[in-house]
Length: 136
Image (tube, rainbow, N blue to C red):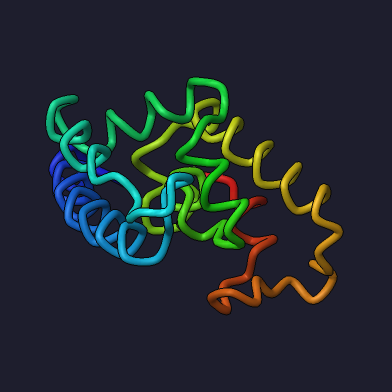
């Protein structure tokens, strides 16, 4: 049974992982203007009372630059959708909150014609299909 204390500890871990995720994203992606990816997402997470709440807000909106830019640059693992679907964080999100993330990633993989039959995301070795199809 997952207790409120466990959820609070998991949320704190997610905040740390979110910061590390954004640092890696910033170092990897280039903004459409050619410069580094904006670090504004880190501050938005802090302003929105934590990373979990901010990621939930992002997932509830239509896909935008935080999804499109990593996809355009071949890095689906650097989307908030991919982060939220990591099995470690599933207890922090309701299935309905994750449905848009699953849909976007499924559509992305279907649209690229990427061979996911082996289940491997060649960028980072994660099992791409498990990330999309994980249920809480």
